[in-house]
Length: 195
Image 1 (cartoon, rainbow, N blue to C red):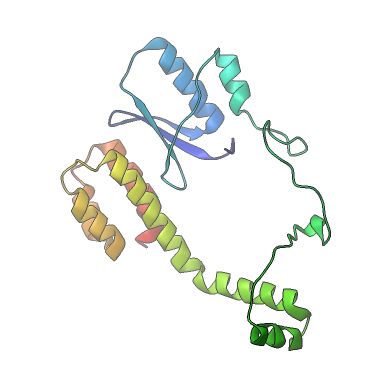
Image 2: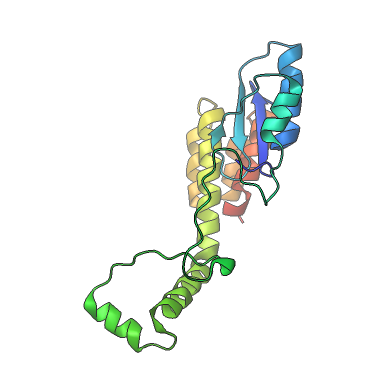
């Protein structure tokens, strides 16, 4: 888990913290020590996935667990891959690609060889589908969050339909009656899908 990712922390229907992992764990540790509120649900700010944080130990222990790790040191338990052949400084990773003989013949006849052609084709596809990928990711993020936090609220199913139909007005109408923090967060996740 990156210490730079944004997290939303909900206690019941109330957003009690939003920010980086380190700022949210600090707030949660203080809240946890002071009150016995409802169960806190945490969401990744970009994917809408529910996440868990370990708040055990002292406030310093919790901060140390989630503080940023310098790039020169791998995080505890992270396996660092061996440097191998290729261009590791450029981040080139060698993997096996299985193609039919006619594909290999075509690739071999192209300028730059098979690797260069495959990189160009992948880059072209990434650029061509970037907008749709962004929309799909926003829809999925909003859906994950809404299922967890608004699944039992009035208008949930209609809001989900509006989200996937990319109908901003209808989505806002269906979410308007939701608790403010849930409504605002759902709209934030869905924003890129409804443009």
